[in-house]
Image 1 (cartoon, one colour):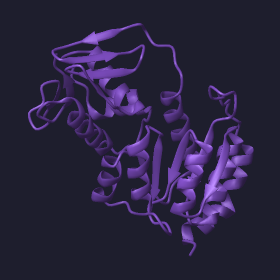
Image 2 (spheres, helix red, strand yellow):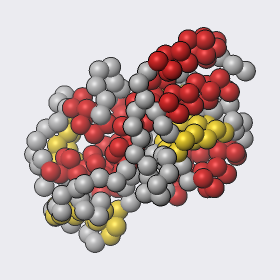
Image 3 (tube, one colour):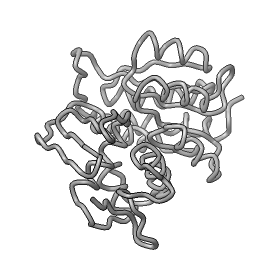
Image 4 (spheres, helix red, strand yellow):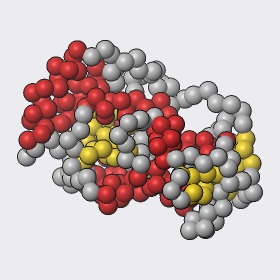
Length: 257
């Protein structure tokens, strides 16, 4: 069943996509175009996103149900997944949980479920971002670019930050806690590394959204709260009484060495 907003979007947005300037896309390490898998049971939604993402130079794949999505993820190894929640077969949350148990593949959840508990659940399951329908395809394309820039190869300083039992290695992008490897997503590493490079400096959620996510303007800063909670669960001995990632109530967060 097609939602009314999706039908209206189909009539308007392709014109805008065609008239916009294309964006240069950096190939991945295999020399191919970066690949985006769009998982949504509404063909019109997939069509609109395909139009925008292909205009930006991405290779796109489509799946209309959860089972097809998992097959494509394993076979095609996409660079990013745009994922609806309500799907035939496996739902989007189950897929997100499955992805995160196997890899740090970036995931953007795009769902009509816009209540705060729904957004928090999606982010806690490991989604990098959560966008509520109806959405702007141009905004989705922008978020895709931002996340892939963060996840892709980059020049980093040969810097190894060492604290009491915690090591953050910028060159290898690895974190250890008391000698044990800590598995972080690209976003989680960037968030930790940014804060650790500025010890004792307090950053608001808005500033972190700008510096780490690359988003400005009207944003859901609850995204920062959820990712900080996940990061604490991974690096803190007692996440309820954090040693490193501390909250400054009413202001934001700081890293305390």
